[in-house]
Length: 118
Image (cartoon, rainbow, N blue to C red):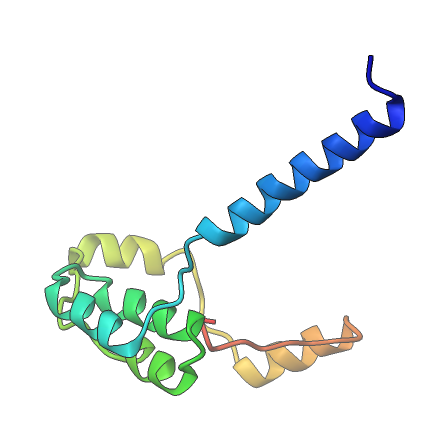
């Protein structure tokens, strides 16, 4: 029979080997610019520029990420006039400055985020 200390040592060594093996085979999501642009050229989806922007941001190419996030895919969905009117009837225009100032009075911190892609 094995001593408890040898069982613990074996367990630690076996666990370390599996962790190291996992590190060796881990697949990275970081791609080169050439890989991203090649995938973009092949992509015909409406969200191709957003996909490219995300890939560029993951690989640290932030300027390219911003450039592609701001691109218009040229495919604009249309809705009927009646559906648009129904949607817009739920809302009323307000003075943005006044609205923001009122919200600021209610909070210690007010964050306005217009960068929807990050």
